[in-house]
Length: 221
Image 1 (cartoon, rainbow, N blue to C red):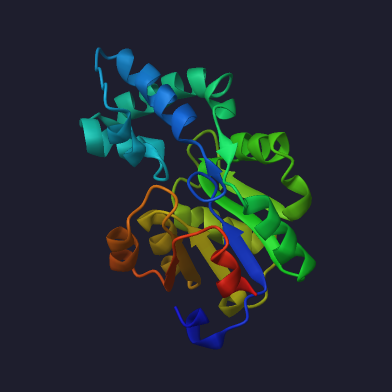
Image 2 (cartoon, rainbow, N blue to C red):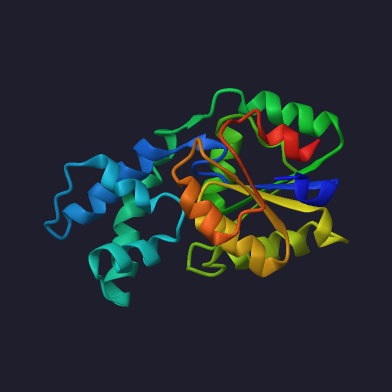
C-alpha cells in the first residue's frame, strides 16, 4: 500500500476482535456453548475461528445451516456464556497500546468500529484501559440493529461528524472490514496477525496489508 496515494489519514477506525484484541478463546468457547445446546460438538477450536469478525447470525446460518429463528436463539445462548465469562477470555495484542499512544500523540482521531454489540465492546475497551485512546466506540445493537460492518462504519462516521471520508482509514483483519469500508467509501488496511488471510483481504479489495501491529503506524503517520 502506497499509503493510498500518499494520503494523510486523520481518523483511524479500528476493528476490535482480531485487530485490537485476541478474543479467540472467549468467542470460540461461547460458540461451543451455543452449539452444545443443539447437540453439535466441534473439538477443533480452529474451525470456530471463522466466527471471529462476521455478525454471529450470519455465521450460524452459513456454517451450520440454521434458520433465521434458530440463528437468533443461538446468539442468545452465545451471549449467556459471553457476557459473564467469554468477554474476559481476551487479551490486547502485544505492542498495540504503544501504537495507539503514538497515534493519539500525533493527533489522530481513534475510533472503534466493530460488529460486536456496542455494550460489550465498550466493556472490553474499558476493561483493558484503552478508553483514553478512543474518542468513540461504535458497534451493533443487541437487538440486531446495525448488523453489518458497513452500517457500523456509517454510524461511527455520523457519530464522530467526520467531514471528509478521504481522511478515514479502517483497520481490520477480515473481509467484512474491507467490504464494509468500501461500501462506506473509505480505505481499509488489512492486518495479518488476526484471523483473516492475505488472500481474503486482497480479494475483498484492501488498500494495503500489514503483518504486524507496529506496521499500522506506516499507514497512519
